[in-house]
Amino acid sequence: MIRDWFDPDAVRRVGATPDYRFSLANERTFLAWVRTGLALVAGGLAAAQFLPELRVPYLREALAIVLLVLGGAVALRALNHWVRCERAMRLGQDLPESRFPALLAVAVGLGAVLLVVVVIVESIGR
Image (cartoon, rainbow, N blue to C red; front, side, top):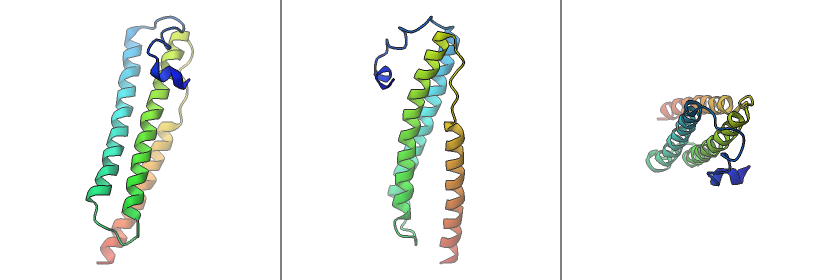
């Protein structure tokens, strides 16, 4: 399946060509996920470069690493999901289910709560 990511004809060799509107919608969804991945990577770089040192040792670096890894995971998952959806459309099958958006939302929500706690602790400590 991973080799399908790098072979533009691999998906086209399967099944019948779907309505172009569906393929283009699938591509727009893929691009939206890639933008999300890029935003997470940018946030990781910003955390590493612009956040001041925090009272909790290495918290800034841990936050940057988590955001960078999450951004990379989102981009790879987007590519995998695009290929799986395109294949399913060509074969006339149901689109593949994905729990990844829910997992990402929970991770971002928990990260936000953690950062609220850090901001409160930092402001109390001043």
